[in-house]
Length: 378
Image (cartoon, rainbow, N blue to C red):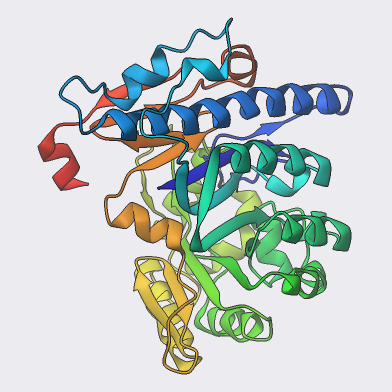
């Protein structure tokens, strides 16, 4: 089994981001973070206990599905005795824990001490378990890294996105290229390090993309996730990007350097897809992706999934993301936190979708029942 934990807090919202994240006012920050972690602790505890009971009952004729077991919890009577494991004291065994966001390194060491405490009270790790945490370069420090490593985190995934300061500004990232090298050195305490890169912006060119990969290769990393910039409902700048894309398609590519003068166009219907800005040198987003793949291959990074590349070390590909592979294999997964999505059996479930509602009802879940055809398609 794998476990996803969502930390929704961010210092600012990036223009392209459509994930569930919250930017808090300074006066509310400490109070709401504590309340969220209190709620998350309950969510993790009861998710693991409910799954343990689900496994215990699975072989019996009268077994309940996971969602029914979890939904039977009375949030006013939170007692470990509500969950009795019929097969003894065995725990859920986790092959992967992935802490994503938001920006997980907005939480401090004591917050994670509580989070890992409740995980290890209710679950065990497999021999080669991978524990990943996402982080942003501008918020990393040495003590935080040392503490997280002591809790068992052995992999960090850094939201680098680009080494070009103009491109970082376009993406509305809070860090600069200088921050990246400093913080990846701090992150070397973890066994494995991964970074995210974004291509498909109007600033990209063949020269810049090759430079991005070359800069990445200077870092002590063993994995890269490379994503094309997408338009998705919920992203702050989705409409702005779509208007810019429309303008560039009808104008000279040189207008990519004159984004701020883009006129207000009619409302554009947004669909979830890759942008196709077509760069100054005539590259389409699909061609940009091919350049990134080709350049990474030169440095012995092997593509094992649509957007993921793992370093081939001495003929062994041992740096893949265990979490992502589990999703691709159609395996079950538990998820805890604001709007976190999990699936057990034929139930794909999610938590409350606003911070206030999740804090008030962390055990409230909605279920989408999937048919055999749905599961096969996925």
